[in-house]
Image 1: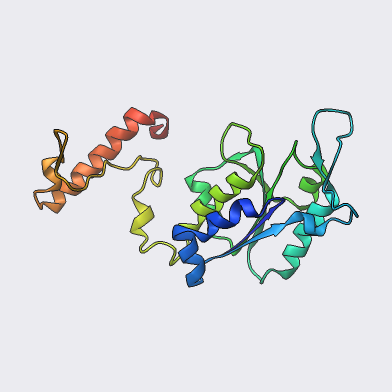
Image 2 (image 1 turned 45 degrees about the vertical axis):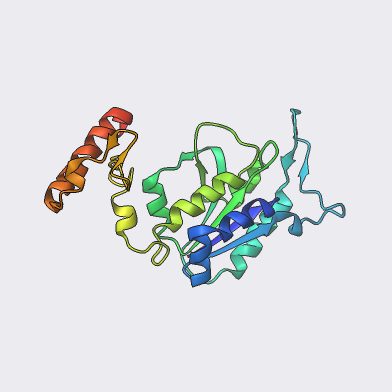
Length: 226
């Protein structure tokens, strides 16, 4: 799978994508993640990519020309396949596990990161397929939300994780939270690992895990059970 992250600040993201599971997946060829500097596509002699908004208001707005030209240039060089252009926006559809699974079925994801007070609406009208939000709050830019999308979607791609089991039973995968986890030592500051997890009865252990998933979801996220 290929991710093209369009941003004014590529250095914010490069280190994230080079580390840990994502970095290893890129090294193995399971993923391709490219950070594209939108500023490289501006035709302004001062390399400006924003301007004051019509109608007044505080702050600056990202201009059409650099963003649209950047998106089109990236589209042109992408290999053939199912492609989607996403704009990270607090006005978009709220991102969740189902959306991550849906996006993993694409061959190419182009993710536009806004900045300042937002982007010219015509960029959305001309080039954006879907707006996505990572939560009901506002950030200084779309770079961190874009990293969340890349990280979450990547986990569904073959070879990124050791096995599908790594995500099939995790929190939110089946609208249930994951069961509690324990490791050694068996007793820590008076708190002991549940007996069922150390008695070797795998059937009982699976039953315990399923029960805890339902109980934990009912306690922490009852909205998911609806």
